[in-house]
Length: 352
Image 1 (cartoon, rainbow, N blue to C red):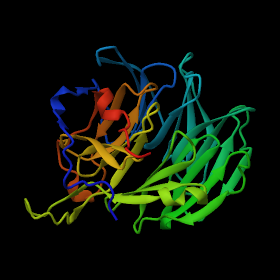
Image 2 (image 1 turned 180 degrees about the vertical axis):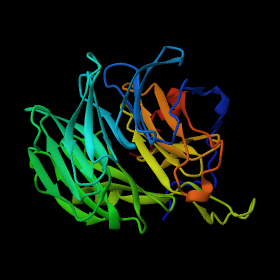
Image 3 (image 1 turned 30 degrees about the vertical axis):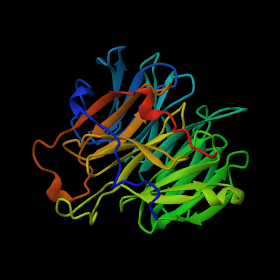
């Protein structure tokens, strides 16, 4: 069932040329983007084995400030709460920490397979790093110790993980979703199959920590609330689809939803896909707020800055068409979009 009326949407398209390109981008596909929670510094993880840090100025101009490496592709990045450390996970089966003030890098986590996702958890007792891996575990780390303070076995490989304390959601292979209350971090609060029929690509927690969104490889997103009392608000909708021929309205070309990012202030969210498009949505009004002009390649990752005034997105090859899609000169860039209030603010819903 589709509640977002995508075919008949009149959302204005934004001229892509007005978005600003980040200077000196990575040399291979971009896997992850994360803004500092304290300032407009953007961390970028890439398949070229590096994490780059850019400073974003008031007019969108960017300057490279730092770079550090993993021995393999970087698959996920995040910051700690005070913005002094960057954490990254990679295909070297490790998570690494970059100290912004000293420029030093150190290994802070280890797994038996690549680390797909990293998130910082700010608990009343202090900050903890969580890592999700293809070795079918989630591990919690106190950065002062070389050993994990906890390991949780997952039903399958971790594909995506997100935290809005005390909520943590892990999406794995075979469509499993593990939902944690981090007040009891060693045991899932609930384990369920994804409401979507195909492979999970991304999970993203509501900023209000009472639910999450799931995106799949078949151009569909599900909105899911944690409590059974809110289950009437659960729904899914189609997006990132195209007609096979113009005006056929068959929506038969289906693309993966690569990332979902919630606005930190308004709670609206973005979706991006292998089709090179981005949409902003309001889940409560069940409406699309904005459609971006298509980019010249898949969108692999997205993020808002701390106050939601800047939206960053990566245009990179995502291997959705296999090896044959990796053509010479494929675009590989990071774009910055200045968010207008009407693009990200919730619509007033009549009768509610």
